[in-house]
Every structure is written in C-alpha cells, then in structure tokens.
Image (tube, rainbow, N blue to C red; front, side, top):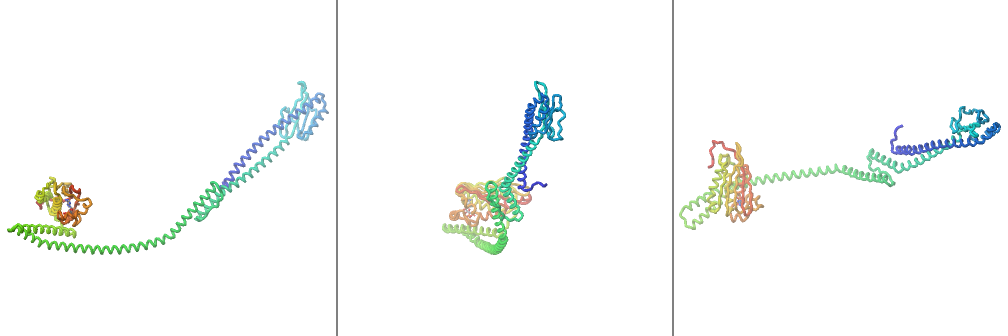
Length: 516
Ligand code: ADP
C-alpha cells in the first residue's frame, strides 16, 4: 500500500489510528480486566455453593445414607451451571454421583479446596468433617457458560463502543475536512492552476473565520496584487515597443537637430576665426604701420628737445615725447598681443643667464624706484648663475611688466624681485620668479580678470595710473608659451605677489651667453 499523499488522507489516517486505536486499547484492557474479575467472582460464588452443599450433606455422611446423599446431589440439577457432583465417604468410595453429560469425567487426583479452572470446567473439592474426623469429600464441577456469555456480551459492547468511536471520529474528520484540509486542498489546487496555467485570476472561496479563513483571504489579496502587477507588466510590455519606436524617432530627430546645430556652430566658429584672423592681421599691420611714423615723431621730439627752446616750448615738447612713448608702448603691446593670439609669436632659443636678465631689470627700474622713494630689493639665489637655453627678451618683457606694475601701484614700502632655483637636473633647471610689492593690492573678485586683455582691476586705475590693460594678458601668455603659469595672490591695501616657474634646458658649457 502506498503511503497517503494528500493531507486529507493523512489526517483521516491519523485520526483513525490514534482515536480508534486508543478506544480499542481501552476497551480491550477493560474486557481483559473484566474477564479475570468475572472468573474470580464466578469461582468465589462456586466456592460458596460448595460450602452450602457440603454442610447439607453432613448428616447423610454420618449415617452413611446413600439414598439421602443421592437425593441431595440430584437437587443440584436445579442449579443451571452445575455439571456434575460426587460424594465420597471417608475411604474414598463413591456414595452418590450426578452427571449432566455422559462423557464427563471426574478428576482422578485430589481436587483442591480452592476452586480451579480445568479445561472446560471449574472444579472444587470440599472435605466434610465432624469433630475433626473426616466424614467424606464432595467434588463439584461447573461449566463456564456464564463466563462465556458474559465475554460475548462484553465483546458486543466493545465493538459497539468502537463503532461509536469510529462514527465520532468520522464526524470529527468531516469537520476537520470542512474547516482545515478542504480549504488547504483548495489553496493547493489554486496554486497548481496558477503555476500551470499562469492564470492570476484564480481565487479561492472562503466563508471561514479564524486563521484558515485569514490564510485564504490573504491568498486572495496576494493574488489581487500579483494580478494587478501582471496586468501593469503586460500593459507596459505592450506599450514598450511603441514607446521604443517613439523614443527612437524622437532621438533621431534630436540627433538630426543637433547635427544641424553643430554644423551651424562649426560654420559660426569658422566665420569667427576668420574674422579674428582678419582682425589680428589688420591690427598687426596697422600697429606695424603706425610704429614707423611714431618712432619718427619720437626721434624728432628728441632732436627738438636738444635744440634751444623756450621753457614753454620745452614743456610742450616733453609732453609730446611722453605721449609718443605711451603710444609706442600701446602699439607694441597690441602688436605682441595680436602675434600671440594669432599664434605668430616665435620664441627664440639662445643661451642666457636668468640671473643676468633679472639684474638687467633691476638696473632698468632702480632709478625709478629711487625717484618714487620706494625700496627696491633684489634677491637672487646664487645657484641661478648658470646658463640655460631660452628666450631672454621675452622673459625680460614679462619681468619688466611685473616690476613696472609693482612700482606703478605702490606708493610706499618696497618692491622685491626674487629669483630662486627650484630644481635642477643634468639636462634642465627650473627657476622660480617672483615680484612682490606693498602697493594698493587687487580685490579678490578682480584677480581672475586682470589677465584678460584690456582689463584693469579698477576703472579709475587707467585715469590715475595710466596703462592699457594689456601687460598682464601678454605676460601670462608669454609665460604659458615658455611652459609656466603666471599666478597672483593679493590683499587689498597690503600688496600683491606675482610668481611663475619656468624650466629651461641647460646650455652646453662651451656655449657663450647671449645676454649679459
Ligand atoms: P596696465 O597697463 O593697466 O597696468 P596690466 O595688464 O599690466 O595693465 O594690469 C592690469 C590691471 O591689473 C592693472 O590695471 C591693475 O588694476 C592691476 N594690477 C596689475 N599689477 C598690479 C599690482 N602690482 N598691484 C595692484 N594692481 C595691479
């Protein structure tokens, strides 16, 4: 027999085995106990009957009255279960005897005083005495039919109880089936259907309360959620392709639009570059063209100043000379700037000494600093005396611009030009250049803008200090062309510091310095 597979079979089997088994065991124990109790009771009653009969036979034995003895024994025929009786005298001789069945044999050995079960009969022996002298012996035999009848009755009761128990168990199993296993089976069937058909509309019916009812309602709610999500998923899937097409079309449109914009931008950039190039060329040409007559004007002003002039004429000529100088600086700056912007600036590569370049700048500005009552310090690291390869003129231009600005924007205190060797290798050296002043300083918001062309930190600067706003723009680009970065740090009212580092290849020892 295969083991029960469904929960219903398992619970029914469990109930039957446990309930039916328990009832059966209880009934059997009860029947066994009752059987032995009945045998004991039957034997006791049989013993009492033997006592009673024995005492009635006392007289017949004393007188050896065989007829009276036979009559007394015949009386036992009225006792339903008494099967045989025998009276023996003191010598063991039979005095009287009764047998209800012809095949019935009296036991040969001595029958005990206590009733005993022997085969189909209950036997008992009674010694009948008088004043301590034995008169004779009575032997009685009874059948076991009352016991058998009682056992049969008991078996019927046991069976009836068992049957009743099974009926109760069956009713109980039906209740369990209705309230527990039935719902669980319907849940299992629903799950099977959902899994095999992938149909999330399946629900279980439940009117039950308690945990099982809650379980089924929970299952239905869970399936509602799953179905909703499945519907949404299906809908999303259905629309996905549509959306992908729409999005692809949108993206293609966007790409085409961007390509068009990009083309437009490239066209605009090319046009702007062309315009810038044209402007730079124009500026470069114009600056160059203006420089020649301007140099002539300045030269003429110099000649004029050497000739005998009245004080007023000298004053006018000096003004003319200064204006010419200023104009020449401006034109030179514009020329440099346009060269740099249009990438036409070529750096020279010649052997020079950075220390000597700094010394040249110091010599150039020392008189001006003294005139303005400013301290002009010069700090050169002795390690910087070697020769390197680079454009000394452009380096000087940058330092000149920085020192010139420092002197211009400082009314008291000092200006320091510092040169330090930052690092040194066999083939190259890195120098740190720094110009510090204790002048008016630059506002933090302006510090980024001063490197732009034609920009001044303060609009009043040009009025008060003059200048074009091109010096730092040119210096920054020159330093970058030489491989460095021009940086500034400044505090308004306290002073300004400009610095940059440049790396130059080391000159062969035999090369002569280009700048002294
Ligand atoms: P400018 O010809 O006007 O000096 P620059 O490009 O050299 O042009 O300088 C731009 C501006 O940066 C200056 O107008 C000034 O406002 C500011 N600046 C430059 N150097 C200093 C300095 N050492 N101290 C204070 N302000 C400075």
